[in-house]
Image (cartoon, rainbow, N blue to C red; front, side, top):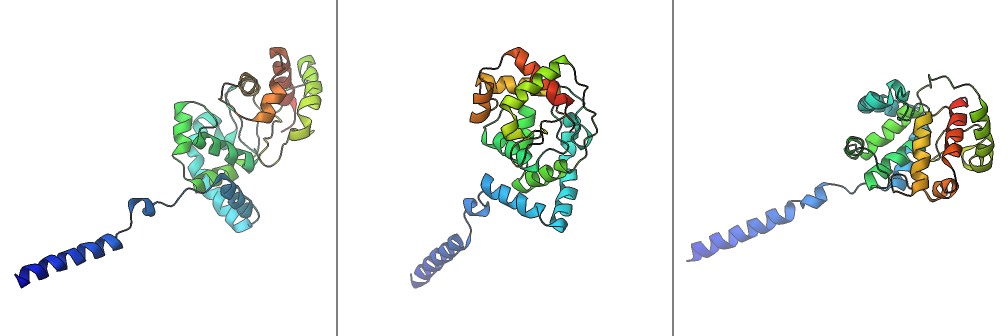
Amino acid sequence: MPLIRFSCTFSLLLFAACAHAAPSRSAEKPAAPSPEAMHEKLAQISQDPARLAAAIQRGQKDAAVCRHCHGSGGNSAMAEVPNLASQNAGYLLEQMNKFVLGQRKSSAFMEGMIKALSPDERIDIALFLSQQPVTRKPAGMNPQSLAGRQLYAALCVACHGADGGGSGKIPRLAGQQTRYVEDSLKRYRSGSGERIDPRMAASTRKLKDTDIRNLAAYLAAMQP
């Protein structure tokens, strides 16, 4: 009996020790950083030449799958797919985070691909694409784009700048694909949930389809 009690006691102590030492499944996986923390890290990397160069190199590899739709170096050849080359890194990261959080909708392929990326991979891709040169030449000015210029001055300059370059989390619009701009503005206007931004919803609410086409034509004519 003493031997049996000793064996049972030893087994219980051993089990308790192992249970205490074994980390829980939830403890093995660290919590995902907040979007704010990711933007802070992106800003820190941007200010450090060595870290930036390393991030761009990693981002080039991570962004390989993006090439199929967004083109080499983010220069899209499809009218409905946006150019990402030279886009503001903060905006690119913001949009990827919105896909992950369900605040922006697209194809199942696009959403699944972005959700599969780690936070660091998203940062690296944003930095890589922001450093790529734009190869697409702007469209020429015409009556449609001239009409769009007036609308742009009234509705868009305050946030996107006179040159359409944007800043930080606000996108560069100059030289963007016409069809993509039209589709995006209509989605903001519709309030369907595909694109969510209170400022854009307010700016597009009263736009007619003709206004949207004119704006898109002007943006396509701007120098990237």
